[in-house]
Length: 160
Image (cartoon, rainbow, N blue to C red):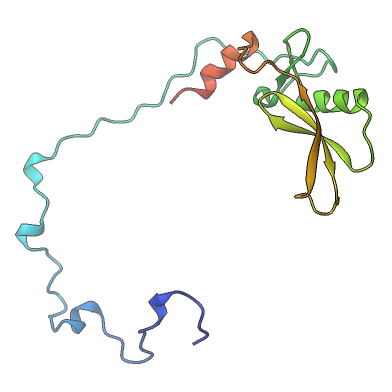
């Protein structure tokens, strides 16, 4: 044996394995039918309610287009709102715009840090992505604001 694995490999026999019925001195067909005291009480069972699929909202959702690049936003769940107008824009368009607006030094990168915020991240040792510091935080979306364009889409994500 190689020594790998858990404790389930300790007491295995190579030859002459027995099945459970032979270990305990029982006949092989004994134990197939459980004793009545272990059977489930079939009189008290009740029908479980059947699952019904949720019905999606009746009005179809239109795909908005990005006001910055003009292309349709195919995956609205990844869209982020425009800082000035509040309309949905591509996440990649926001990353590109921030990269153009901010002066990035060597080993700097623009990253989404959550909550509608982006950060200018400096990697101290670029091959090691764990060693970084956030140089600047950019508040892009207002944290507690609910944007109107997200409401029709939230119905599709909150069905169950």
